[in-house]
Length: 396
Ligand code: 3PG
Ligand code: MG
Image 1 (cartoon, rainbow, N blue to C red):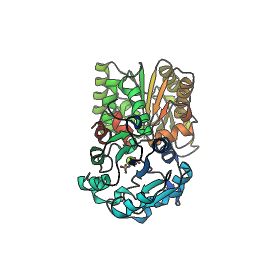
Image 2: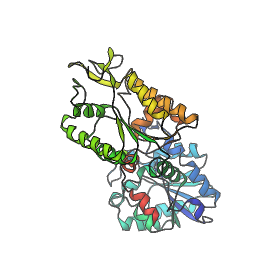
Image 3: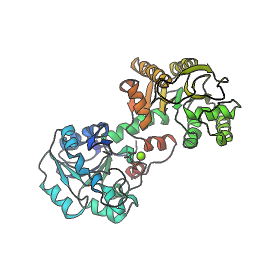
Image 4: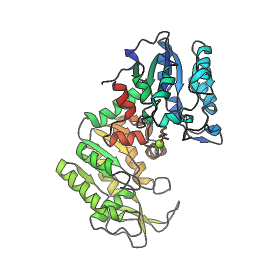
């Protein structure tokens, strides 16, 4: 790979500006999912082990260039300290004297956390002057924030060009996993793409059909593909105006030798609520007053057969309305099948996206996947074949 890792840099006695993504969900002032915080630990430990001083740069939420006290990173100090098992020194600014003083005062093995970079108007405009102020605080730059790498911001892009730079351990793991899934994968490759709308994932579908051998389409977007084939879907969520786009994706897939898999049977209900009365019907038999809320058992069996014949799986988006029972059945079953094949060493499985990870966790399948990305938007953009500015900047 064309970027440096922590192994390539001498960090002894150096102050290491480390961009992390600790944009975690909070409920009533408490972190409700620690994943992103826990995942920076290998990078923090590696830097300290190599004799460097860790200074964390991060954003939280979207304060839009203003100081918004509710979005202060100060609220994360305790969670961070508990996860790292180290003292965390907080600086109420990400540049200038306040930051410099906190860095100078931090002792060996202590971690410095600088205030939300997005409190500065120059962060989201990728302002070189702000990046220069950040660069003045340290000797080396490490980017461990894959999940923010689709943003060309001062702390993710401009700063990388001002100091010797490297990818952190999590960034490295994310890039290697995605490269294994879509770069030079073991074939056949199957992609599962679900979710509500075709319109938000056109670029993704168009790119994937040129790269993968099988594309399984689920969720609301499958209905749009069914409509495109002249199949009636009753009151189901479907973007009828996208039918021609769906047909184009189908043609593109045919040319590229990618098989598209649509539901052959579906779970329908008249109400979209937990425990609603539901039926399995053939894909052509959705009643006019009902809606499709999940894929049916025959569809699940055929998806499992596709998985069994594949070597690599990349998954983004649930197959049905997984957040409401019993419409999580297809997603759960397919996720369990992928988990089992991975456990048996027959499949490399990679998944990403907020909903997807929630669905795989709910299915109890996430732990067995080869790799679960911490990224939402960045994972999607990478799958779309786009260059991520935060990664490109590390290439020098
Ligand atoms: C995320 O949570 O997706 C990342 O932290 C990026 O945040 P953003 O979508 O506000 O840029
Ligand atoms: Mg986002």
